[in-house]
Image (cartoon, rainbow, N blue to C red; front, side, top):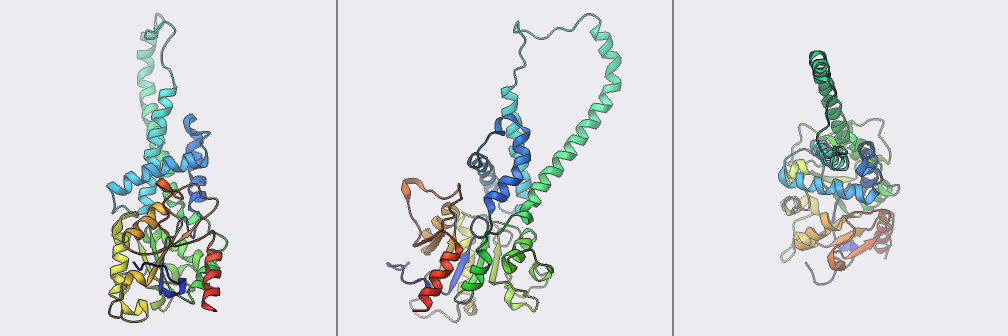
Length: 332
């Protein structure tokens, strides 16, 4: 990393986080979590930050254990594990003790009645349990599939197309390919596209990673390169995804507009652009890559570091502000 940040326009490529930076990840997750949170007493009055903190704790555990799990499946598993934890908390709040501290006693004759009823109730109990398990599984899956419902930040799409005039844009995101297709279309067009086909991951790509603008059906995609966790085999903040992106960019001179000159490093030609300090700015700094913090003011997660560390070189509150700063610098 150079000793001074230089100018924004000195770089050739931007590596974007998506969820939290370009898409309103927090609102999408929180809205999708609400039905589960309202079901259990301990979480009914959780604040947005408390809910997302509980989610994030489970998510990080699972991402560390299962780096190859598709993100939609991982989200469903997070929902399942979080529900198990809420059930356990709820059971602690429910007292099963009797007034005399002993086991509840059955009235006389109850044993005979219970024996007669057991045969008729066992079948219905088993059926109810099966239905409940099936309903739970459907709810977990619905949460995993909720990515397609998450909203774009209002300034995102226009800012991306403005920045694409000055840089090659790269996606490095904790998501799977199928889920990203919905996001890809919205980011490209600013709304849900009437024809989503240009934004689907191709089955016959000719490069190691998808380069949308090299295909005939590129649509309005502003992105030159897309890397999901499914492509890199790991989730941020692991360094693996960033290292994969940098190595691929270095091996593909066309992405940088030409071969690196003697003494030039790929790390000095790219900027990481993200909201999450923990998932993106810290690992970027560790690899010697400068970054731009999009400090979304409504965010309650990933916007503080111990000791107030600032591992970024530039800071803007919105993508629109960032794009405007680049336009003004380029016009000088």
